[in-house]
Image (tube, rainbow, N blue to C red; front, side):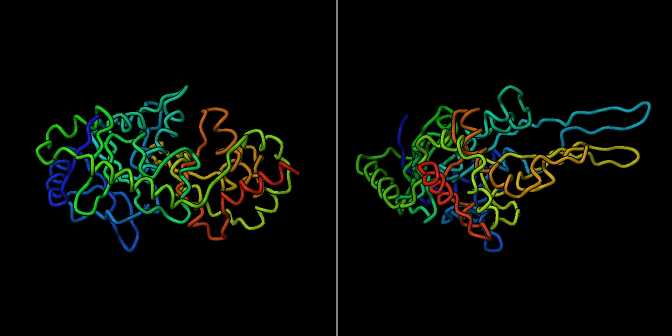
Length: 342
């Protein structure tokens, strides 16, 4: 695919045209926090952000979603919710967050296909934005990823001060630009070299690493190790790590109803909550905080690799940044390495 240049003074026109034909999501700042929301004009965009606190997974895997409605009684009925086929564009998503969707895909498009997720996923175009200056807790390179990766996006923008270097990655990305191609110029070798330099410096600036060598086998041997008890002494089961994680996908089904009608609603949940595994019988297989802490680590670094062939982590660092008791997933995996060699 080709590489292009977009001068920054043309960005408002690009945003205007994209929002006129698509539902356009981008990072905006509200009350001091960046988050992905629908935008209408370029003035709403905050392209100086590094990571939004909540990942943009909520654009495709909705935090609250009605699956069907029903009417009780002898002449009751069930009506499926309409699955809207809406063309969407996510602008300025970071490569690590874009990668999260490829990790979520086998969950919602595997043995049982989720039409709500699949419809949004198939009709969403991802426009990535290179991380020129990663955060101190970023560790995407531990997963053979890069702050300037094109692997999971349709287009990738890289900030070159007064312009953007634009890499056209997929046919979806190419088709999107057809209607606005007059806004772009062809790139030069010098500009391509500048992009490569930025990506290389960004990679070199990532100092934190996670050693994943044989992590599945190591965890297989440590299920009953005291490491999980010691870690759980700090945990307060707040669920921040799971709600902010771009790959966590626990959900609950709730029926909300009146005497005349009701709805079955899917909402985000967290394996860190004791109620998550509570059975109708009253039995709870993970009532202890230790077992929930252990399950979170095993799900990402043991169960998911076994079932889907990929680690359920992107290295975004959100769980490290916002854990109120400073549980650090990189340090925890390092401890796994140490105790597995004892």
